[in-house]
Image (cartoon, rainbow, N blue to C red; front, top):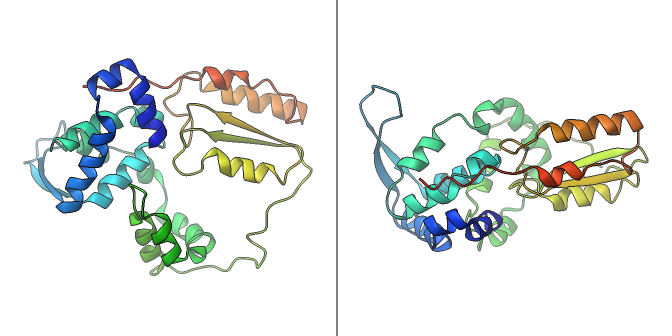
Length: 249
């Protein structure tokens, strides 16, 4: 989020439209912390009567976080935050109720994996301490832990947390703007793979959705498969993959 807000501050049109974007972000969260917002909302193009929607702080922040997975959705975040800080949550709801990454995830499969491989290693007290100064708080930790408390859990090998080590050629991609698996994770993996190459896509989120020339990744992958070597690849095109402009209206 800090990277995204910094990009807005350096972008002429975004900064002109939202000159106090960091204050807007803090104020929107502070207002929802005091009291959830209640909004009359009708989905665009629907003839149904407006419904009263309650927006809680945790839900608002989590939806903002998941919007950062795709740069085309992230381009709307400063505008959404600015409106929310001024009590207008319609732009937020338009994006929040539209199809997004969570809508395309098989929840059962997701819980089967994460409840075995992730949640058992979370220390609740440590998580509370680590998220205390984070604007997203520990909402996601609590919700995921609660869900896994109701989901059957599989067994994993005792050495599951040991790093994967291999001399095989490995090509690793990371998005610099990824809110869930940032480049530091790619670097950690690469340390144990001596014949690997870690390519960081400067403007990518969790994927390359919304960027120009998404075929760049395919070309790099094909070259890697052709050569069987991750070291000598021309990955310069990732530097030219540009995000969409910020939405200001």
